Image (cartoon, rainbow, N blue to C red; front, side):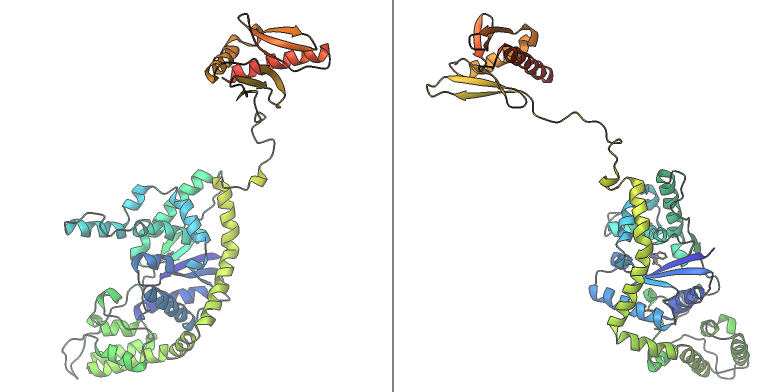
Amino acid sequence: MTTRILTGITTTGTPHLGNYAGAIRPAIAASCDAATDSYYFLADYHALIKCDDPLRIQRSRLEIAATWLACGLNTDKATFYRQSDIPEIPELCWLLTCVTAKGLLNRAHAYKASVDKNVEAGEDPDAGVTMGLYSYPVLMAADILMFNAHKVPVGRDQIQHVEMARDIAQRFNHLFGRGREFFTLPEAVIEEEVATLPGLDGRKMSKSYDNTIPLFASARELKAAIARIVTDSRLPGEPKDPDSAHLYTLYQAFATPTQLAEFRAALLDGLAWGEAKERLFTLLDNELGEARERYHALMARPSELEDILLAGAARARGIATPFLGELREAVGLRSFRSETRAAAPAKKKAGKTPRFVSFREQDGSFRFRFLAADGEELLLSRPFADPKAVGAVTQRLLASGADALELREDEGNRFSLWLDGECIGDSPAHADGEALDAAMLRLRDAVASLAAAD
Ligand code: TRP
């Protein structure tokens, strides 16, 4: 069975050496393994949570896309796409949001850190906290579950998010699976040896410390950055301790075992720091020089990058679209066409009911007609002095009940309706006695159905 590997890169910055050694290089190596199927994407919806500068978002998406390709990602093998090109992801995000406990998200580190900071500063706990930040783990779960990833390579700060994706997946499977496991439970993977690279000052290389070495700086810029690496004050000729020098750790991340052994021996032997920096520069320039050329070539042709990413999105959607269809089906968002007639509850035939229609005569008196449901005139009333009297009579008619109505046969196959000794109205003329009888029955039925509905 192939293992599906998936990871996202938030597009808010310019890739540095730490990103390369910690994430890009191992991800590209993993994607070459025949037993894996990899999904790498630009997490640009996530970027919007942290950044409201459109130019920076756009620039970063471009730089990160170019970086991964320049570093050798083979897009025939790996599926490489932008999160924002897959509309199924935000849609799945909503389905997942509806099964995610608010309490789960309350425990997310990133959100809690913001709250703690606010509380410490004496602010409202939720000051500056957007729903994007709060729901961040659900969007990440959608990224992962959309492609049923088995392994998710991430930094330590992201382990909790992958665990939340597992929780959410389990909950959805339980609620809607009916024995089917819709979602694979993902696992976080931490690359132990390459987890963190030190920056210029020895702390973890990170743009928040401003201690990074840009990945595709020009040779001159690279030299200048390396010159700023902090070392101890040992003079040329004095032995250096490799294990306490982060310059050595940086060298280690890019050297072959033989190169590393030589470098180590030279430091112990008193190699000057200046020369050590020169060697690190040569090492990095050799490793990155070609990729740098490719990077600049790609950056100069953004429409080519666009084509590559759109092709990746089309491939990703080849999986996402049908899968989301199944998930919609599972939660009850189904086409009405699949509804069978038998399954639909039998409904009473909707239609009109018998009714009284009152009107005013030329002479100022008021009458009403009593119409059957199909509009047939059953009765025309005698004249009344005002509309109120019409209302009162119709009320009494319904109240007396169909069986108590007094119907008298009149001349010309008509009948009249009487209430308390008073003639209320007359039927139209009917063809014969039989038709008259039927018409009387229809009047009683109409009154009965109106009284029942009342
Ligand atoms: N949150 C991740 C980070 O900041 C980026 C990311 C978004 C991601 N979606 C993902 C990583 C899905 C792995 C899987 O590093």
